[in-house]
Length: 298
Image: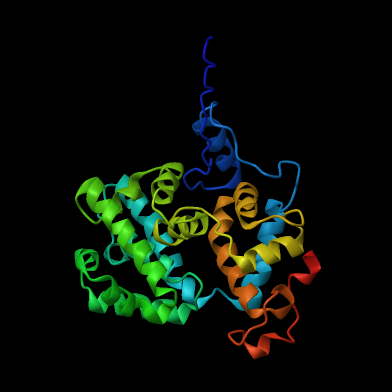
């Protein structure tokens, strides 16, 4: 009896492309750069929102209401420096000094891991404690598990996060012989996502944060605050999970608005009781009775 032939599996990749100058050129680049054999990932192709005009309006209203969040200012400046540097390279200029001082990609990945399920203050303390205890990543890799956990304990979930960090370092050492992720800067977005997702414990949100904050790429991470706001605004169907919301919003939101809009929605979700399902101690009391600028869009 003839054995049945196995059907060849076709892998699908996210079709986000390199930053474009405007929404029109972005659409063109998607059509020309993505091979026909790679299907477009769109969980809600018939859901028309958010529109580019709506994204722009909400970005402007939140910017006027909150100002740009101070905690994300350095990343915004790095994006500006990165664009300036790219332009300078085309004209034969040298990289700017401020661009060279930013965190390494590996630093950014580890800091993102430490930020999971904790406050910004605690995650920053954990990262600073880790760097103080172990000056190099080789030191982290060879350190005893308990010492590593102690160094990051203030950030919470120390055993889980320590194991994740050690696994990443071990994989890098085994693959290339050195603890470095700078090669990701030269890869297309879909390849970056594939590389980072290959590490155990690294999910879509962590990958998206590294892309947006540490690789200056146009991506749109979805956390609980942004998921709640997107659902309330009707940007995704009711019941949409974080993964599908991430895929949908990255298709719908223009590249040039993703960074500012993401930072502003995240900040607004933390501060506004109307837009958050969780009212905790970390929320600012003065935000409770303020008018919410998103009500007009609900």
